[in-house]
Image 1 (cartoon, rainbow, N blue to C red):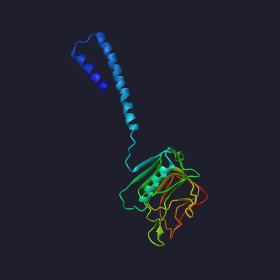
Image 2 (cartoon, one colour):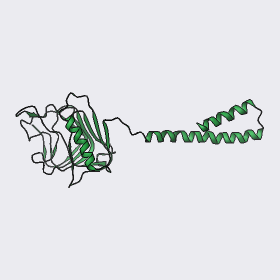
Image 3 (tube, rainbow, N blue to C red):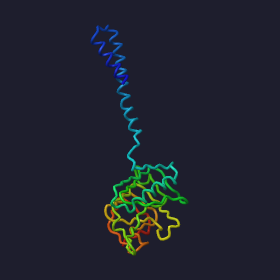
Image 4 (cartoon, rainbow, N blue to C red):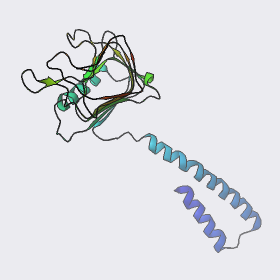
Length: 225
């Protein structure tokens, strides 16, 4: 704003008064410098403003590897506890992971995805974000002996790598992705046991799901039910 005001003031004085030729040349030299400075500074100021934009809404969570794993675990568990059975609720969530590694062989990151929740890595390729643990979808039990995945809609997983690690999970050993329609998995690398049905509770019906541009690096992939 200061540069623009200076330029406007100079132009007004020069056109409303008689300017000496030498003064004009000197003043136009100053004008040129100020004009160049104004154009040079304007884009950088705009870029700085954009780079500081971090508020994507209260339901968008962006995690980075420097955050305590306990904090990440508590956040994703709180959202899962709300959304796993929240089929008709208004809440929507995005859980986004910056490039890096989350969890370890001794302290894995394991969590569930419920309704209206998207989990994605923010790297250029799936290998840029690594989860040591699991990101799961289990059956929903609608009564005695009526545990199914037929209503596990509206959730997604994309652009990351999962090194499956589920210690002391009993029957739920492996990556469980028991979903139905509108639950895509895209650009995911899975290292370890994977099941596309939740066989731990009966009758374990699953239907649909969509997987694309993904690789399961395991000799044990269960398709069913």
